[in-house]
Length: 621
Image (tube, rainbow, N blue to C red):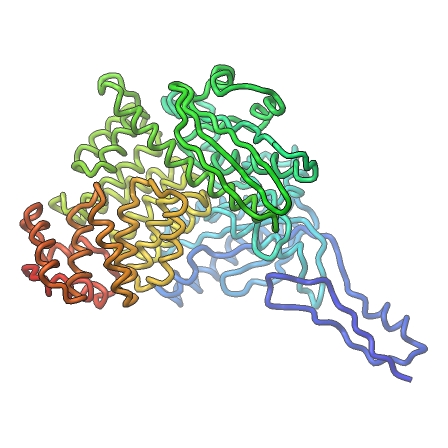
């Protein structure tokens, strides 16, 4: 008699290969022996997952050259090192590599060795042809089949790789514990991350080529590193309900907010161990400010009832005792981890711009003669956000750099101002100005590779140079560094709109608006939304947003031109002519040639579509 037996393997989420089961027709008397013979092979292994950054862009630019360069890298850099550290390449297909090691120490040492060798190799390669890897390492139980590996141990390594910097390495907490004291390598705590198809949050540790240099720099008493940087303490959120089962959520939310604010590179965030000393104590913000020497305090509370949760938070300026911001969040308790991530993102997204605005006001009140590097930097940002001449902003940033040449933020500000001068047509030589924007942004990234603002302005420089793929790559990386960075969401939405991907841009614009409705760049968000909707044929909605943006106090001639274009396309010619007349009063030289020079569209058809509405309103050629 024959029996049908189905043996299902554990789920292997996140890969294309799935084990549906092994079916055997066996004789009843030999059933046990057959099962033992076909048992799935497992083993514990350190898994190294790597992929090439910007592989599609490299292949699009030069397929044959990229494949040859990759072959050369394998033979000169990668294969020999993996063998040296007793590893095995499981597969190397396209832009992805998977390797196995019996030791976590060997896997990490090998990864660092490869990344450092690649960095040296790339020094002699042009930027647009450099091949850079991201690497993730995890230790876990894996399933072996035909020399290939599957299972959560592999999947987690792949997710860690996606969180790594270009040229960097991310490792799991278990790997971090195993290499402690065995390797002289500095891994920074990158906090907990909820990743696709992995149910539990991952505790991630990150290394990049600049991690050690940045740490060394931070240990020096830089002019802006400690004394002038704004500082904040996040007090343990108070649990106001009696539900002890959800008490862990209170501490978890506090820890997540601390970790997320720590990604804001210009902000000094007091460590968890210091602020958790106040847990369960009745203290006011002023006492905390005096004991921890901070400018700002963030405090909050959580209540639960039935299936609902209420989180309240407030931000206090300790120097004036003023409440800068307060908000309440009401949610249903379903997926606790998703809820925790959502509220953390909402709080940090709202608090960061409020802190930025407070620092701008503080710098503006200080007499210019007594400003430090941080103060000049804030004055530069104020000049940008208030739509003053970009020349004023550049002078402030140059003064900040003169006081502290290693201040990444000041170089980022310079890049921003150079690019803005091209967009607002405030320069004589756009090509030279954009070259300066790119140089300043690269300097900012070189000084602090983990600064989301630096990568954001580098993306902006690439965007105005019409290097759209590089712009998208940098902006996506900025959002990986700081998922609550409202301006990066807005700018990514702008780039996507200008590369004929308007539908994709709207969720990014929505997120930027949701995170920071009072952001200094909110008018730009409205403008790009209007353009995206116009390109999608939703002219009524486009008109609503274009009018809203034109009424904003910071509206300029470029933003009002969008209203003219939408009105022209809709046939509202008289109104379009009236708005155009207002623009020409401010900029008599506004013309088709200026639009072509300042609007970084990728495709001529999109530029022509935008110009067509202006033409109908009578814009001179």
